[in-house]
Amino acid sequence: MSTSTTVAASHKEAGVPGASALFFIQMFATLGFAVLQSTLVLYATKHLGFSDELATSLMGVFGAFNYGLHLFGGYLGGRFLSNRNLFIGGMVLQVLGCAAIAGGTAALMYWGLALFLTGSGLNVTCINMMLTQRFKPEDTRRESAFLWNYAGMNVGFFIGFTVAGHYQLIQDYSTLFTFATVGNVVSIVLSFIFWRSLRDLDTPLLDATPRAWRLRFIAGVAILVALVPALWLMLQVPSWAALIVKSVGVLVFTALLVLTIRHPLRDERRRMTAYLILAAGSLTFWSLYQMAFSGLQLFYDRNVDPVLFGIQIAPQWVQNINTVVIVIGGPAMAALFTKLRARGWDIDVPRQFAAAVLLMGAAYVVLPLGIHMADSATGRSAFVWIGLSYVLQSLGELLISPIGYAMIGRLAPRQYQGTMMGAWMLLTGLASLFASDFSGSVPQARGSEPLATNGFYAMLFSQLGWGTVAVGVVMAVLVPFLRRLIDSKSDNNTVKA
Image (cartoon, rainbow, N blue to C red):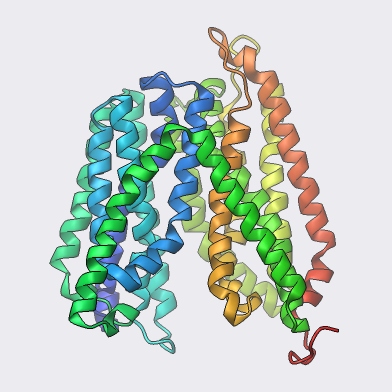
C-alpha cells in the first residue's frame, strides 16, 4: 500500500475530518519554501551576480523574518482572519512570490521575497493550529497526527530539494521557481476542496459578532497587505534589518532575564533560569545549523568534489542527507531511548541539549580535516567529509529539535508561556542572522577558488567547531545543576526573600 493510501486510511479510521487532507496540504505547501531555502544563495550569486556577503545577508534576513513572523501568524489567524483564511491568504502570497522570482531579475526577486516571506512567515502556525483543533486535549491520536504531518513536511522538503538540485545543475532557475509556484497552487486547490473540514473549531474569533468579525477580517487583510512593502523596504538594506532583529532579540532576552530575577516564586524562578541557559546553547546550535543554506552551501559548491560514484551531486541534494537522517533516525532514536530508559539510563533535556551541541561542534571540526586532505591540484575536498558533517548535524537536530518547544510548557510559568514560546521561536531567526555573519566572513576569490579560500574556510570551521565543542562541554558540566533547577520539588508558594 502506498504512503498516501496508508495516511488517508489511518485518518479515516480515526474519524478525524481534515487530518489526512492536512498531510497533503502540508506536503505541497512546503515545496516553495524548500526550493527557496536551498536555492536563494546560489541563485543570487550565480544568476544575479550578488556578492557572497550580500547573498548570505539576504539568506539571514530570509530566515529571521520567516521564523520571526510565526508567532504573529498565530495571533492574526486566531483573532482576525481565522487560521483557514490566513493560511489561504499566505499561500496566495507565496504563489505570487515564487512567480515574481521566476521572472529572473533582482527587482522581481526583492518583491518576490517580500511576498513569499509574508505568506510563509504567517501561515506556518495556521496549519499547525488547524491540525491541533481537530483533537480534544485528552485525545491520544494527536501525537500520531502531528507525526504524520511532520512526515508530510519532510516529504515536501525531499521533493523540493531534489527538484531544485536537478534544475541547479542546468541552472534553469525560471523553471525551478515555476515548479515551486505550481506546488503552492496545488496546496491552495486542496484547501478549497477540503474547505469545510478545515474550519476553525476553537479560536477567540468564533466568539465575535458578525459585525466584529467583518471589521477584524478587514483589519487582518490590511495587516497582511501592509507587511509586504514593509518587508520589501527592509530587504533593500539587509544589514539594517538584521540589526533591528538582533536588537529586538537582545531586548526580549534582557526582559526575560529581569523577569527571572524578579519572579517571586522560587521553583518557577529556577526553571526560568534553566530556560535561559538552554536558550544560550540552542542559539549556538542553530547558528551553525542555519549555515547549511548559506556558507556551507557555498563551500560545497566551490570547494568540494561533487562527484560521488560517478554521479554529480547538486548542492540542494546534499540537504536531503538531513531529510533522510530525520525520517529514518527519528523513530530509531525514539526506540533506542525507550530501551535505554527501561534499563535505567537517565536521558533528559539537559543531557540531550549538551549532546546536541557537542555533535554540532564535531560536525564542523571534521571539515578542516577534509580540507587538509583535499586534492592538491584542484583544492577540492572529498564528498565524504561534508556528508559526515551533515549526518552529525542531523543527529544533533534529532536530540534538540523535538524537545525544544515541548519543554516550554514545563519550564515557563503560565503567565509567561506565550512570551517564552515567542522568544524560543525568535532564537531560530537570530541564529539565521548569525549564520549569515559567519558565512559572509570568507573572502571571495576568483579563478582558482578552492586553493585560494581553503585556508579561510579551514580557519572559520575550526573556530566555529571548537568554540561550539567548548559550549557543549560547559553544558555537559552544567547538567547536574540544570537538573536541580528543572526538577525542584520545594513549595511553589514560597516567595523570594
